[in-house]
Length: 504
Image (cartoon, one colour):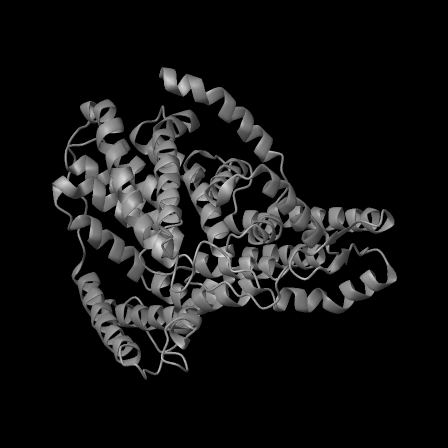
């Protein structure tokens, strides 16, 4: 074991044992509901209140254990869940992405991207493919990571290096992409619910972080490539042995990709036709793109495109046979969402109970007042949230679970201090992604360890953490620096979205 491995192995092992003692995320939110119940009783008994800085209204805490609170919970438990913003948007997106994934389109497209990359650009292609794979996380972890090891080995390089580069892209770049993903819809929905604790009409668009995510895709690719070639390659490549080249695409897979490409070109043409003219069908009432059907319906458009491309690939490749195959692919995708739905039910109860009790609003006002006295500035606030998110991610693995827990506190607080919900959401995503690589609580961490052990039976948790720690630290520093630059230049985070909030 190297000196670096010995340095981090003990603390991370202790952190792993601590994290393993946490309950299932759904149970965690159930316990939090009980905690809110007790806290609301105590807050009402003490007469806890705050004055809203925008309206001057006095906000009084309400007890969920009161007659009024019990009635509210019984009457709204169902609508708390069915009206919870992250539920509908993610399910609609997954209908289409499920077809694209189960037809084999996503996995084949990732393989094609990596296989056709020049040898000199192999590391960059692997990292970039990993970043893009967040459109369907399973394809990245299950298909790309083991494939990258074989590709590096076939090129006479260490397969461990290929595995590390792919894992850095898939997991470290989870919050970057060139296209919108279900994660964008999921987080935007949670952010909307949180900001409405202080301003009822604010809606966080799925595209709220899109411009920053485009830049982040390039950043993660560059940083991941640099760490791979300059930090890890000198240690690992001297142990490499050449192996037979990884298997290329079959004739059926090639036909499928060509068919999906034709659908993509047709879809792009229709999209341009509907958006380029000033009176385009997908523009707003005044011809604007902000708050237009294009952006507001982006999840539906994504699902429709993924469905059509998946069907085209499946029919041409023979993976989807019969008229019912694509419907069954959607059904299979929905079956895989069972755990997410259970988690969202309890998360919705917690978020709405936290809001109804007014504890969220009172905490936001009090926290905003305390932070304002410290005067850390907008950039300092966001960097603080990046670090908090990075630390919490070491003990709570689910991105949705963490944000559902943190958003009702941080978004209203930062909004009252002049930072938009989209800025808070982006800061959270940076912290969450950068420590995905070194937390054993990440759902696929054990799977990646097994991939490493195929090439080195001695590899274990400490080996993986040692290899991934340079990626984690480099991404945390570089991504935070990009956020500081973005704030300093006041560039929009997404279409019509500033990092600074405009208080009514």
